[in-house]
Image (cartoon, rainbow, N blue to C red):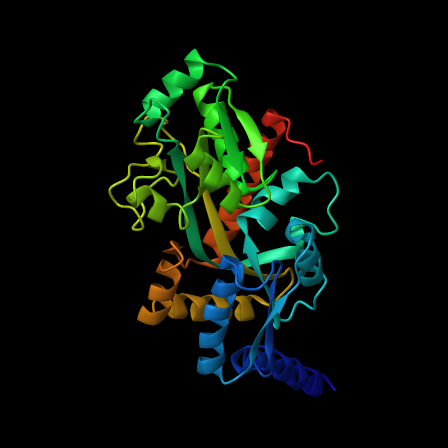
Length: 319
């Protein structure tokens, strides 16, 4: 009897790595908590396509938009923890929403990180008529005219909104927030002078900057971006320690076996090194990342803490 138990235990132990090696044995679903054709969707499809080609299994992108990303995130949180349902998490869902909403239908602890995929910098731009040509001049002008400058964002609680609130907090300036329903309206009103400033995702603004229709002062990440290498960072330009980006990365339900997480992470990192994928991501104005589950978990934690503090100090409340 004892011999039989020992053999059974050995067989069970041997089955664990074997099962992990066989992953994936069926289609994988990547939930995108936003509408098709946006950056989150494009990134999920870029990674999913290469996973499918490499593993010979279908990878389905499932768009579940609504409630600032919370609907799709909740669906992913309640999925089986087996590696066959992933979520393309964002700065909004996993960095901002936990501090923005008093009650969420999901908990950040419901997820474990796979890999950070990409980051999209924000760019600080001003109307050409505003008499400032640098971040330091903007700070000085705002302090000399407290509450008279307005800045736009594509929505309350967006990365653009909170990036400016972080800027205000770190510089001691007072600017008035004007929320819009999207970036197109913000950009149009900065160009026309209806609002003075914005710090929004870089891709749609660069053509207008190059055309001389608006003035770029800085980019938001800690390091300069390849999308605009000649533009200094906010930190370089006068606000040491400033760092803000929109980001995107794969996460899985908590409890997913570590061997499966590691396999997904390794595959994601492999994909992000492929030249055609790198080029596709760069075309979005994004920076390719790719890191370990441990690094991404630590990053998510730091993002939640940073934005919770900004939201609390700025008294941001959803309408």
